[in-house]
Image (cartoon, rainbow over all chains, first blue to last red; front, side, top):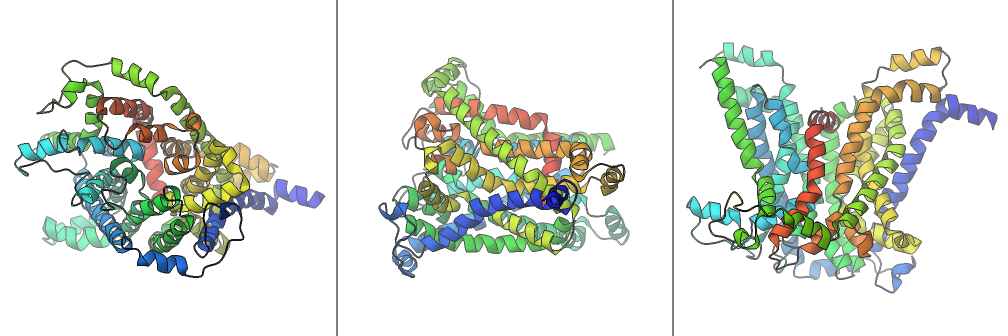
Amino acid sequence: MKRLLSSVRDGRGFDIVLVAFPLGFLFLMAGLPLLYNVLMSFQEVDMFSLGTFLRPFVGFKNYTDLFAQPETWPILGNTAIFVIGSIAGQFLIGFGLALFFWVNFPGASWLRGLFLVSWVMPGLVVGAIWNWILSGDFGVLNFILKESGIISGNIFWRSDPNYSLYAVIMANVWLGTAFNMILLSVGLASIPGDLYEAAELDGANAWQRFWTITLPMMRSTIGAIIALGLIFTLQQFDLFAAITSGGPNNSSNVTQYWAWDLSFRQYDFAKGATISVIMIVFVMFAAIVYVRSTRHEVRG
Amino acid sequence: MSETNRNRLMLVIAIIMAAIYLFPLYWMYITALKSGSEMFATPPSFWPSEPQWATYGFVWESRNMARYLWNSLIIASGAVVLITVLGVGCAYVLARYRNVWVDIGLFLILMLQVLPASLMITPIFVGFSQLGMLNYPRLAVIIAIAAKSMPFFVVLVRATFMAVPQELEEAALVDGNSRIGAFFNIVLPLARNGILVSAILIFMQAFGEFVYSKSIIQAVELQPASVGLNSFMGPNTNEWNNIMAYATIYVTPILAIFVLLQRRIVSGLTSGAIK
């Protein structure tokens, strides 16, 4: 007992205590729910059996039922469009801005940091602002687009099934661009400057330097950022809740909103758990890519 | 073109781009000051003709914002305290050693960081309801947020601890400090700034948290400001000036903290996520 105490105070035991509590907490509150989720996806869960663990097992019935529903494939398709559209927008605009701010001028780093306000704002506030900007009759976006001659009539961003998903994508691109830009700036700053001097001496123009030095040197950063983008995009929930609620008629619904909607609006917890399991497998895959591409940095 | 002129040109372009990017924020502040009729005017005015400052007081009173913000504050503070108490030690150990176990621990932590809250809420809600935790909804939300955000905190703080030279700790041990003494007297003070910045980041995240609060907290008196904003925005609302006033009151403190601590927050953020 005494040896144990002194080990906790002054030895290996100290480290083990420090690390055991957080990991235990994480296991209880994140690991167990994960396993419970998988369990529930094989059970029949309704309001009456919510309080017990011993629910009837139904095998893969939840999964087959889910894919028999007519809305499942369109929603999976929406998710793919949402993820690809958001990541492409965030990354391209973010990369452009990062390249611009890479040219060092006074005030550059302060202004660049200012962009991050979009990222620290609560998602629901961002959603509320964009909901108002995208409003059909009185929205300022329609006004600007009409004045600049891009569209002739008002677009009902939130209530037109052809546009509702893109309304949320727009808001999400705005939200995530700054984060992409900051991380890409860090990657750009770590490229040694003498590479460019050497290339310039060899007569390479700006375009060639970008393709032969910048892009190859940024490969692992870009991989990590795309994987992070996938992770963050699949976590995006607040914008859907604030802008379209997945409507109209599921036209802007995505799996992460749908899973919540099934559980908490339709009280079909088993279906909610089933779609969660499917999506978590996807997210885990992205996480492995992310960890692999930042591995040497994370290990220090 | 001379160096100064080029710098000035770049600065002007940068300011224009920042202005375009931050336009939604400007629009929120402007709309909150417009009257009901000016808000729906065509063409929309880009500067309020008669600023309606009374809207803030009206929204504050009628939406009970003091209560909502107080709940947000309780939830965010609780989550930050829980995460800091648990996470600092974990980050320290993961920074101090380099072996297979640390790699495995880091990998598991990174994996937990990526689980979307809206997917995890189903099992958490069912589990909490079975344990009777839903009778303490704010505590339940604090725990859920802590489990969600702690991995991020550990990764950020670990980067801070890596920057503390291990020789300093060894010297303290040689001088007769115990491990506990060396940790609290030497290592923690040196890592204080990084821990503080990470805690502020977590606070800002938890202050705006929505999914867990919306799903777990049923009683209106206990809901945070994000849920309050959500219930304010009905499907066919036309009170946009009031909603924007609500959003302004909600978000301005966060923006103020961010602008004041911008440099530290940005560098803390980048050191953890990517090198």
